[in-house]
Length: 359
Length: 123
Image (tube, rainbow over all chains, first blue to last red; front, side):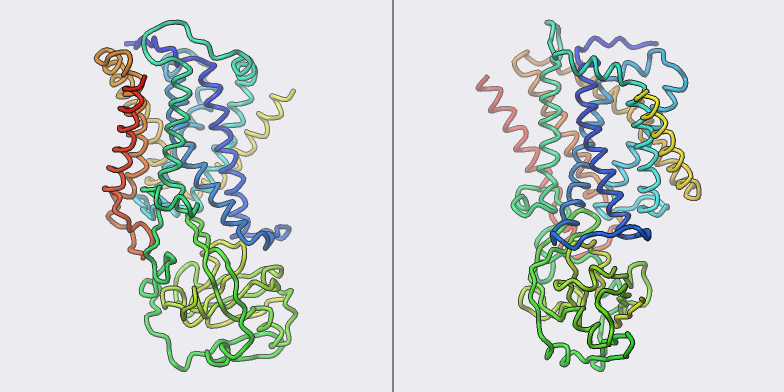
C-alpha cells in the first residue's frame, strides 16, 4: 500500500532550506571534530595555538551545540522528503542516501549519549564517531553533488503557500527554527555560563568540588591517598625532584583558565601554581620542548599526556597547586595538576608525578 | 564540472571513513549504524504523520499549528533528555549529570505549553 501525502511541507523548497541549515551544522561539527581529533592525535605537521586561552572551549562548544541543533533539523528534513521513500529513484542515489541517513543518525545519537557519559554499546566511542564522521560528510557531499540543480532552483524560489489543510510551508520552517532554538537553549548552559540556570538538560552543574565538575574522580583513578613523601620528578638534561613545600616556595603564577571537556562542557576557574617552563629550565631544558606529563594514576587511557613545545613554553601553562583560592581537591588532582590554555580536559593530567622532556 | 568535483571528494571521504570503520565492525556497531533509518522510517515518521492528521482533524484551525509545534518541541526535548534519564551504567562524577533531569524536563515542557497557550489566546 502506498500512502498518500497531501501536506504542503513535502516540498523541495522546504527540503532545500532545512537541508542548508543541516549542512551548516554538519559542516561545523566536522571541522571542529577534526580539530579536536588533531589535538589529541597530532600528526607531525599539526600545531594548535595556545591563544585565545578559550579557543578549545569555543571549538568544542560549537561542536556539541551544532550537533544538538542538527537533531531537530535532521528530523524536519526527513519529514519534508518522507514521501520520496515510496517513490522511484536510481538505485545508486537511494544507496548513497541510505548511507547518509545511517551515518547522520549514528553521529547524532552516539554523540548525544556520549555527552551524557552513557554507553549502551560495546565499541570505543571516539574511534567510531571519528570514522563514521568521514562517511557522513562523504555521503553528504555526494548528495549535494547529485541534488545541486534542485537545491539551486529551490533556494531561488520563494516559499509561497497555496491554501490547503495542514501546516503551511512557512510555519513548518518557522516551527523547525523554534524547536532547534529550544533544543539549543535546553543544553547550551553546559558551556555558556549565562545559560547555566536556563539549560535544564545541561550535562554539567555547579556542584563539583570547588565549583568545578570532575570527569574522573580520585576513587575511579585509584589515587585515594597521596604519599606524604610524594615528590615531583622533572627529567631533563638534569634530574630534579621537588617536594610540595618546595613547589609552594617557587614563584607562583595565577591564571584564569577554562577546563574544557571533549564532551562539550566547560568551566572557567582561577588556578595558582608553578610555570611548567620554570620547572623545565630548572632541569636544564629548553622550555620549547615536547614534554610528557605522567600521573600517579596507574592504569587508564588518559593517565599521561604529551605537551607540544608551544604549550610547554607558554607562560600560562601551569602545574596548579590551588584552585579558586583553595588547595586542590584530590578529585581535581592534588597534589598538583597540569592546566594549560586551549587544551582538551582529558589532556590536563591530574595527580602529576613526573614531567619528562622528550626532545 | 563542479558537481563531479564535489561528488568525487565525497566518494573519497566516504571510502576513507569506511576504511577507518572496517576494524570496528561488530554486532553492536552494525546495529547502531542501521537502527537510525529503520526506527525513523518504520516508527517515528508514521507516528508523526498519524499524530499530525489527528491534530489537524480534531483541533480548531486557530490551535492546530501551535499544538503541532508544541508536540514537536516536546518530542525533541524528550529525545535529548533520554540518555540523561535512562542511564543505568553512567559513572557518578560530581558536577556532571547530577541535575534532576526529570524535573528539568517537566519544567521545560511546562514553559513550552505555556507559550502555546499564551500565543494561541492572543492570536
